[in-house]
Length: 200
Image (cartoon, rainbow, N blue to C red):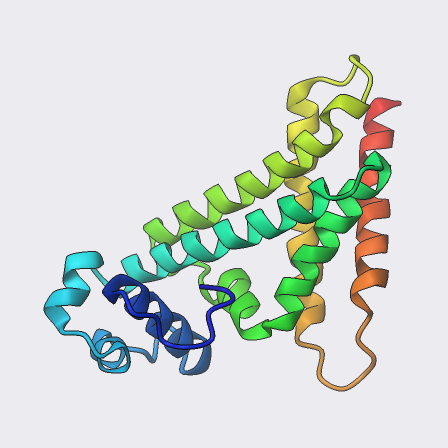
């Protein structure tokens, strides 16, 4: 869904695409189910065969988008052989995706907050998966004196920090925007420092 540029052929994908398009242009609150089905060119019956509500569509959309993002981040990290740079390449890919489509980033990181319990559950699960990816990247590098719980907590904190930095920098009006590389380098240094301090 993240890289789809034209209306898909399958009904469920059409609804997801229309939802993403409308939520990022009109806003979640200003978009109705009728708007979605009209853009998707499907019936309301078809919509309700796949989703129970607009909120349920948002949860499904968020799940699809974040699965795609996690896959991209994981692939970028796994392509790097040097352990010290794995987190950097993963973080850089995440930032690049968020900054290349700021409306999608805004939807996922800002506008979807508090929409419904279903959306919050999916958001929380997505952040947990991102933290797990960071955890797996550093797991074998730290001494055995560092507990798994400590590594998981630091990984969760890093996801929060990364998302906050993205939110604070993706929509800068005027001024100079920091480059993906510089931002990823700085965040990677923070991640590494957090884990190094944990090991001491």
